[in-house]
Structure formats: structure tokens, C-alpha cells
Length: 93
Image 1 (cartoon, helix red, strand yellow):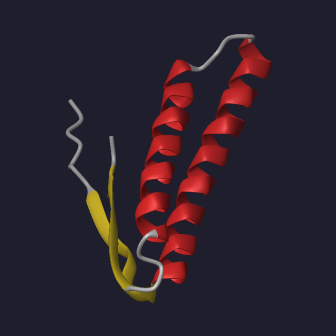
Image 2: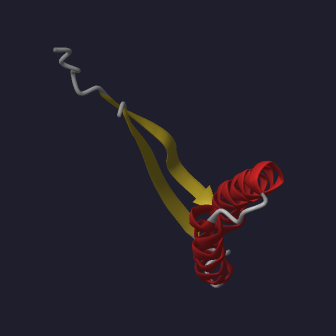
């Protein structure tokens, strides 16, 4: 019997205070990249199988809503300083 050890790594991706416009650029660029990633995944899956990929389609919708909400918030605070802390946790499955 093989026993796998749980492995998790955590890293800080973004940590700092930014001008409002810089914060908006950083955050919306990350979200845009994730939307593009899921679009590519969706198209690739469709090309291979002829079927839709519901999980990616649903995630694109979620990300678009998140982008809209954060964009509105950051637009209304673009003359402020914005602190961003973003961590990533990666676990082996």
C-alpha cells in the first residue's frame, strides 16, 4: 500500500500598496488572464469532443461578475492608495 504525504506550498504573489490605477491594472489583468485561460480550455475541449465544457463556461461567467464588481470598486477609488495581499496555496492531489 502506498501512502502519500500531503504536500502544500503557500506563496505570496502580490503584497504591497499601489496607486488606485495600478491596483486596478494588476487585479483586472489577473482576472482577464483567467478568463482567457478558460476560453482556450473551452475551445480546445469543444474542438476535440464537440461538446461544451460546463465547468469552464460557468467559471467564465463567475469571473466576469467578479471583474465587473472589482472594476466598479476600483474605479470609485482610483485616487486612493490600495493595499493588495494575494496568496496562492498549492496542494498535491
